[in-house]
Amino acid sequence: MLQLQFFLLVAAILFCIGIYGLIVSRNAIRVLMSIELMLNAVNLNFIAFSNFLDSGMIRGQVFSVFVITVAAAEAAVGLAIVLGIYRNRATIDMESFNLLKW
Amino acid sequence: MTLGEGVQLVTFVVLSLMAIGFALGVVWAPSIVYSGFLLGGVFLSMAGLYLLLNADFVAAAQVLIYVGAVNVLILFAIMLVNRRYNFAPLKLGWLRNGVTAVVCLGLFALLAAMAFDTPWELQPIQPLSSVLVMGGHFFSDYLLPFELASVLLLMALIGAIVLARREFAAPQAGEGDLSLLERARPQFESATETEAELVSTR
Image (cartoon, rainbow over all chains, first blue to last red; front, side, top):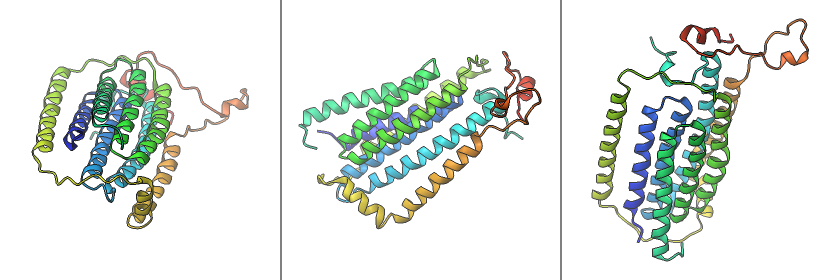
């Protein structure tokens, strides 16, 4: 029998992998991919809650659709920023981006 | 969902193992191209998990938007940026990786303990058509976020175009009309700091 806890556990694993990749990765595109992993983990939590706790009015699924929308917008703008930085600095190493350092 | 419980459990185990393995591959794959394709695998197995949770519309949207749009966009960006680049090893880089791994394991332990300790108020699962209910939500009590999402998508579209647009070079004498399309950028084999600043197209 599937339990709510199983899905929460998988989502927690995915979220932690996303955080690890977000901090450790040197490649800027891999950082964006890690952010997508974290957003997917949050979506899995939303949908698990909406199935097990709120299956009459599936509000969690509505919120997961909004999260998907924001993730699509974030991916477009983030990749455009990466392309702009790559064109100006000729690198995608996260350690060499010091544009905002004062 | 009318599958038997054993089938549900086996499907859940297979899909979650696929998702976790592909996610580890996204973070650890030696080539960024492999990570891009493994990310598509993560998205597909997440769509399968959504189907197990009676969320058929979100599963379809996941396949269409994530696999069809976001993943393809990431692969295009990888193709545009994928120059062979040797990252200089960081001083104390192993320490940062170790501390991050420890912090992530601690966060995972915290989240798992929270998931198993909290007394959830479980309700009996009602099978219903999720599309009709979600449409009702979108056009009644979540109408304002729905409209804001469309405005946000329009802003992101215009912003991404403005950010990623190539700057046109001035037409140079002696070259054809094609020189208007794209200005050749100088390529450096080893991008040091000063050379990287020379590359600036402004």
